[in-house]
Length: 426
Image (cartoon, rainbow, N blue to C red; front, side, top):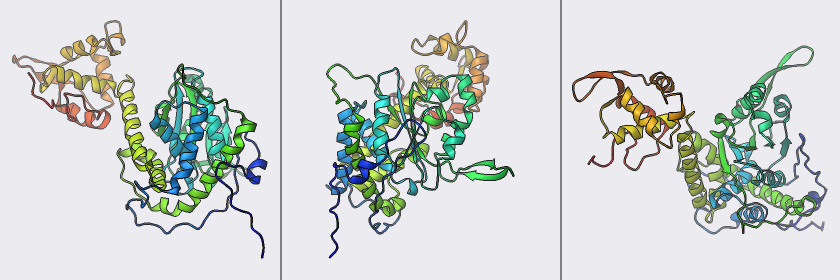
């Protein structure tokens, strides 16, 4: 009888892992050879995972990976650590996803652990392709029918200044298009200039100081790194010493995800968020449902809390929906009238000490500047009747209702989602 080698033990390096080529910070991919197990029978669309809420050995790869990450880097929260683990696992199932979520690893300053986390991603994600300041043409030529995982360090070299960002607009377009399957780029190749379609679909992690462009952040699971506080200890990471164990974990993840790929394709999990946030987080939640144990609940908690935090950050950004949120508060502070004059609205906006509007111009936000900010939301001023019977230029509350629901749905303690007060005015 022919002898067979015993299966590798999770956490230990195999011969294939030991001879695998090392990743460098150039366009290079590291791919492990794994024999996928027979796929499980598909479950009817929309049904719950049989593992949800039950202890299951399927959770072991995720648990091991979580422990390994926590050894070398301090994530900003338990939810961020869970999300990172699930994102890594999801890279091994890219062939079944409709959307390829980005992982935005951002921080306010240097030495927040961004590059260290990217080092760990390099050893654990599916087919890593490392890039620093590469061209869009080189990147989309590295994407095949079996998508790699793009790892972009020092993203400020691509998006750092308006001049640099303008030069790299094609890269941003590639990263935006690659979030959804079936969005190729068309280029001419060869001496005959023959049109050729290049795939863009691939999961990507991007590390940078400060936020990435809005269009990329909107398609990302956002990990906001911070410097370690006194008492927060991590082990030093040594590539030659520590990467074999991480690559063994990658192989373990690859075997498990191969065994559940057919199930993942047919799952439609119940999501705690909607729209693009749901598209971005769905692969992570599906991985959690397939793993079972406590992962389904933890995944949804991370999703809800982290998406809510980013929505609040967007409201606080004056270049986005901050103006709508502040006007909603101004209406509520005025007793939720049917209309408010432009002068009264500007007085409230410019008087808010923590808002940016007082610094919008020499005298604060002007009627013209306010009209410009609201025009893109389809909101315009008009003649409004005041309680004393006078007619002035101003805004009616009904004109804001749709925009409030769409762009700043976070409910103020005293304000309903339609802009009306939840409690009577005293």
